Structure formats: structure tokens, C-alpha cells
Amino acid sequence: MRSSSGRAFSSRAKSGAVFGVAGAASRSRKALKPSRSSVFVRNVVTKDTGDVVVEGKSSVSSTESETSSERARVSIPWTLSREPIGEGPGGPENLSWNPTNQTIKDWRSIYRNTSLSNQTQKSGDARWIPKACVVDGEIPSDLQGGTLLRNGPGMLDIYGKEINQFFDGDGLVHSYEFTDAPSSEKDATKIRFKHNFVETKGFCDEREAQQMLYKGAFAVGNPKGDSFYNPFDFDVKNVANTGVVEWNDKVYALWEGGKPHELRKNDLNTIGKEVDEVLGQELRVPQMAAHYRVEENKETKERTLITFSIESQSSTFPFTSNKAAFYEWNEDGTEKKRSDFDVPNAMFGFFHDILVTENWYCLFQNPTSLDFQKLMTEYMFAKCALAETIAMQEGKRPILWMFPRTEKAKKMLSGDEFAKSYELKNQFFFHHVNAFERETGEVCLDSIPWKFMDFSMNLDMVTPAFWQDGSRTEYTRFTVNPSKKDSKSVKQECLSERCCEFPCVNPTIVGKEHKYVYCGGTVVKDSRKWGPNQCLVKYDVSPCANDSGEKAIDQVYYYGERCFVQEPIFAAKSNAVDEDDGYILQLVNDAGLDKTFLYIFDAKNIGTGKGYECKIELMDEHVPPGLHGYWSPPKKN
Ligand SMILES: [Fe+2]
Image (cartoon, rainbow, N blue to C red; front, side, top):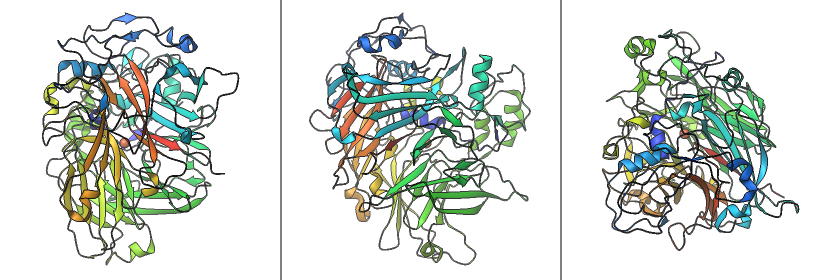
């Protein structure tokens, strides 16, 4: 497939992840701290009902009134006969699961345009978050000098035309810089906030035309009004909305279907569209994955950035293999290593995330393939999205590929092997946790696979029954032994029955055996029932070591019945010793209040005491559910 600029595009259908990000609904017999259900709102894009009430009043401080005064809020009435369950550590007691239509209304309401920029889409200037926005607690001083960067779909309604799927939304990058405010800013916190849309070709063209011009990978129907598509026209818009990384003072917005966009660090303006080089390395494949890994040496603190890409369509005849490229950079931006591999039968394989260990690069090839009949009979007539023609195949086995990163790994290959490969049970992979090697030669790969993935799903199809069985995730460990040359054995074990998504670990433990994992999770913990991610979950996987068969221990902070979480991000403390000496930063959407909050937790104390260290209201703005972010640590002295 090709991006809007005509370059090769690998369809990265991600409809399932939306359900991992957000969601709602749970019921408890015990209410914790009641959450406010009163609301204000703004222009809405959800397809939801006639429940929208528009009021135009801000309730925060005068400092942000210029922005919020123009902003009405989307009020989703609370219609249940009881009060909504409020936030608290541990979650409600005696939980019973009873998802409601209220939950779904709440959930859908947060998927709409950001209020940070209206549809003139002007650059947002840097501004200080007012002290009045700190709802509770204090900002930890250890974060001083660091910056949280986030990316995600920020525009879900393009000049009056609603997009079909969240993942087609134009990328909005925003940053939270922890630094002292100048003396003139007496009412400011230590957080300087910036945001900007990524000025992709599609975004700029549509801004100029003031109308939707391009179709996204998930779009059904032709924005140009034609009744059919050329079935071989795989052009879709590069939306640059999935990942973001800052390395050696360069910032890149990432979208795996195309090339990265480079942003200027000081204002997040786009200075490079679909760049051919990243940090001085020419791309071997005309796209780059949105996921990467950062290794950090615990002793020297030296960090390494590791990225990858794999073409979805073969570029060279006879089209039997696809090129995978791996790149590594030192902290100063210099090239450390790069490797290419030809991967057979990887066409439309959908590789989303990467794991690395000392000796291996690990990719999971999903059991997807092009549905040619659907392409010709439905996509061609604009009856389905392009992404829907890349379907998960029932019974098809995913493949775990382990590409050698070192000479030691190459010596474990046999015959004409260029990589180790293992067939897995039928399941679908988006996000991985971490991988590590044991002295026995075994490699453990922790991931969060989905039972199955239906790319035609979208928010409008969700009912309460959606959260009973169906496509759900489980924290899972895969163990293989590449040192045994002929072994194709894979052990797969579930480490927790709590559904979760968006995992992260302490960067100093990437590629090494970890004890702690942080992710968004459901409040219900059950082998069949699940729900939207409304909790921050900290897993302690030490009971699972040495194949004990034990489950992980989890600590949970529940944000409340009307709240939906974004990806947690780990930020190390300045004098960290233990693996969990750090902070977890997490954005949360409160549908009841129509507000977005930044929570900061001490990673040691999730689920205990008050739970969080600090809760900050984001200037009365609506920041839609995002995808992935990055913690840029304070510069070393
Ligand atoms: Fe992702």
C-alpha cells in the first residue's frame, strides 16, 4: 500500500488497540470517593445520541480562560440510579461486572477533536500550566529537567466530516516540560506545555482546502465523493499519529505505515516531512515502525535507541520476501549498528512492536493476509476500509522471528538460517512488554496478545456484551530456546487474567529480566469478563520466575467509573537503586467531568495510601485518548 505521497505503505490496522486504550463500565457495591458527574462541554463528534448538552462556562482558573472561554463541554448525563464509582487505590471492593450503556456513552464521548486547537489548526504556543491546575499533591522534584512527550490522533472530525476510525486522526504531539518557571510567571507550576499538529502533506492540504481530501487506512467511503475506488490505489494519508521519540535533541513523530516526520524541539513545528534519514541514517525501507526500544545501561547510564521497519509489500522481484531493517543509535546520535534481513512470506504480516535482548531482535508476525476477494468486491466499491482487507486468518499461526543482533546469536543459527523462527498459536499481537535471556539459553518474551482481531470493529459497534469473552488481552510469557539448534518448542503461559494494554518497564531493565510492569488495565479480573482500561496496574512478575506456574501479583489504582486511561510512562528517580525507583506518568480522560488529567505516581506506591503523588488538570482542555509517548530524561551533568 502507499501513503498519500505515493510511497510504500504497510497497512497497520489497529482497531483492537482502541479498546485497550479506553473503555468504561464497571460496577461495584461499594462506592469509593464519588466522582463529580456534572459537566460542561464542547462541539462533539461522537455519533452518540442526543445527549449532548452545550454549556460554555469554564470552572478552572482565570489564567487559562482565553482558551476555555471559547470551549463548551460535552455533557454526557449520568442516567443510572446510583452515583458513579469514584477513584481510589485497589478499586471497588466486591466487584461484580455489569457494563452499561452509560459506560459506552461515556467512552465514546472522549473520542473527539482536541480542544487545544480549533479547526484553524494553528500552532499552539508554549504555556505554563497554572498552579490552580494542580488538583492534589505536589509535582516531584525528581522530574525536574525531563519532558514527557505524547502523540495521538487529535482531530477526529476533519472540517465537518467525521472520520470512521480513531486511528485515522491527524497526529497531535504534545509535551510537558518539567522546569522552573520564570519569576514573572508567579502562578505557574513547574510544567511548561506545548502542542502542535504534525504538518503532514495530507494535514496541510486539507487545512488549505478546509475539507477532507484523503482517505485513511480505516476509512469507508471516498472523501472525493466517488462511488468506487481503484482497487490498486492503496494511497492513504500518513497521519503521523502513533509514536514520538526525542533523541539527541531531535524529535520525530512516527507512524508505521510511512516515513517519520521531524519536529523542531522548541515549538514542535514540523521541519521535515516524510524524511528519508533519521538521525543521519538513511532508511532501508521507506517507512519506520512507530515502536522502538530504549536500552539503558544501569551502571554507565548510556542509552541506545533501537528502531525497526519491515516493508509490507516486497519491493524486489520475485516478491517472495520482505526486507526488515534494524537501526541502533548511541545517545549522541551517532550510528551504533544497523542490520537488514530478507524475511520470506511476510507480505501483509503486520509487525507492530519490537523486543530486544542482548543478542536478538524479536518481531511477531501476525496471522494476517490480504483478502483479495474483499478487496475486489467491497473495498473497490467503497464498502469497507482498506485495513479491513488485511484480515486476521483463523487457524493461521503467527511467527516469532528472532533476528541475530550479535555474532554470538549468529553462531546459534544452523544451516542456511538467517534468523530463528517459531510458530505460535493463533492470536494477534500489538504491544510487547520486555524480553530477556536466561543462563540456560532460554529467551523469555513477555507480550500482551489479543485473542483475535477484527479490523472492521469500531466504537459504534460496542455493546456491553463486547466485554464478555471475545477479543481480549492477557499478559503472556513465551519461552523459547534458540541455543538448541533444532528446537521449535514454544512455551506459552498466561501471567494474569486481568486484561491490560500499553505496557512499560523501567528502561534500565529493557532486554534484562524484569520484575515490574506498568500498564493500563481493567478493573475486573476474570478469565472471561473484561472491560475498558480504567486502572493503572503494576505487575510484580517475580512469582512467575523459573516457570513456577504462579500468576503475577498486581497493584491497582482505579480512576473511577467514568474515567479511561492512556499509556503509562516510566520516569526514573534521580538516584534510583531499585527497579521501581521512579514515577509513572499517565493521562486520564474523565468523561463525567469532560476533563483530562495528568497523574503522577511513585512507582513504589501504586495501590497503597492515597495512590498518586500529584493530580494535574490539563488547563480545562480535552486531549483525546492518545497512543504512545516518550519520557525524555533530564540531561546528564
Ligand atoms: Fe502501538
